[in-house]
Image (cartoon, rainbow, N blue to C red; front, side):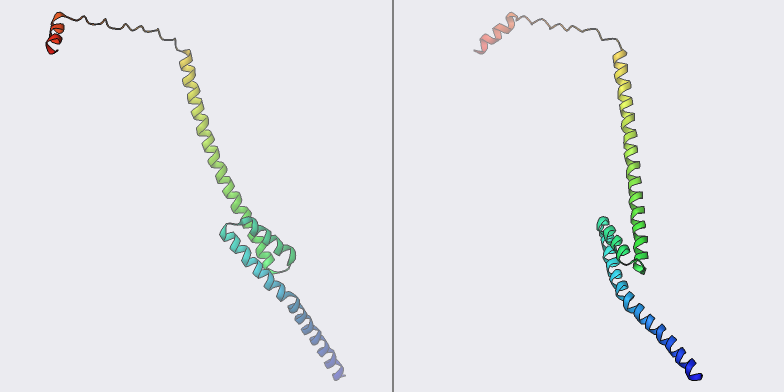
Length: 147
């Protein structure tokens, strides 16, 4: 009876060890590959290549969904999306401020044009040319002397 229970216990332990070994054989290479892909994606993010990083992170999630790297890739994708959303919001705020300033300038210029249009037209000014000076005899005599 003891031999039988010992044999059953040995079979259970062997099955568990076999399952653990099979699980390690099947998952460790995936973890390593997903980790390498995650490292490349993080380098792309650091270099500012968010499109390439997004593609690489999506590939990690699709190919290795049950790895730690897939969880990290999901967080990285959310972080990229959040940072791009913040950058877009800041850019939009800048554009709105510029637009408001331009609208204010347009309103000021329109008010000036309206004020100029409402003002009466100025009276034309006539300028008379001064009469030419008559030459005196003294001037003529000086010229003759010089010659």
